[in-house]
Length: 316
Ligand SMILES: Nc1nc2c(ncn2[C@@H]2O[C@H](COP(=O)(O)OP(=O)(O)OP(=O)(O)O)[C@@H](O)[C@H]2O)c(=O)[nH]1
Ligand SMILES: [Mg+2]
Image 1 (cartoon, helix red, strand yellow):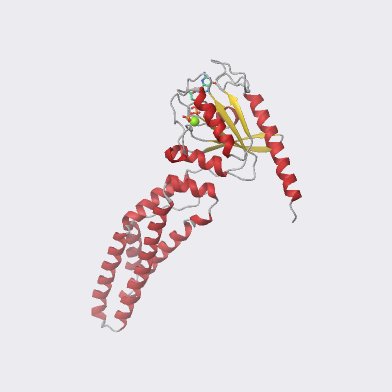
Image 2 (cartoon, rainbow, N blue to C red):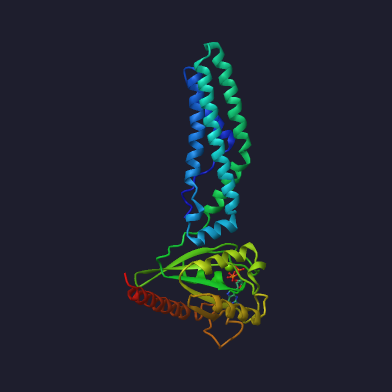
């Protein structure tokens, strides 16, 4: 989604580029025009490449807000816009002055213009650095295709969510024996009968109110609230994850109450503890994993059929 975001240059890089180009000009007037244009055009292009956050699909908007902060990005982008206008203004003013100056005076007008342009650029130094960091973080966000049948993995931390996506897709997520190993949303794919499926791994969630959720949990909520698909809710009845089964079951019940998506509850780590109330699997030994995958595929097919018939019922 954000793969196209360009690197954001520093103030110094922009100034160097502008002054280098200016040095090639014949006279002071062209020097100021070239330097000014390069800076204001570069900044304007940069602003245009950042998405207008209001028009982003809700999942990406919310993720961008959690990961970098949409307001902070807006403020920095508007300061860049201000700087670009300032540089245009300084350029125009200085060119006007030079028209009515003797040749020997145009040099001092040019020097003054370069000084003012440099100080405008210094004033947006922090904004450029911040936007470059933001760009680097946004680019790591997964691109999720809303048209593909999608499984959203949910559950408490440390229950084996990433182990599941590693088993059924080519994704190689970090898997570790402590909670909140997964700190973002990741996507993997598998094929069945020439159909491509998308599996989304999310960070663990605790059974607690939304106001108390940390930024890692909030990313899981963004995926579960905004993406289409079916939810695979993984329990760890062995409680090796470090959390009581009762809390995990409460979270599952809570999720059922607010989600509109079909939700399949399964028990993992059946190699250490059985729990026959729901389908069982072990992402360690692989036992039961295929059966869970088949159940998800039929749930997705049923969901597709349901959405199709809903569409057909709606008058065009
Ligand atoms: N015995 C056993 N251990 C498992 C099984 N599945 C996962 N584990 C272990 O449980 C721990 C957590 O696995 P992860 O896949 O990282 O769990 P997660 O739900 O993605 O965890 P977070 O990303 O922290 O939310 C790791 O030490 C795994 O090796 C299983 O079926 N049996
Ligand atoms: Mg994980």
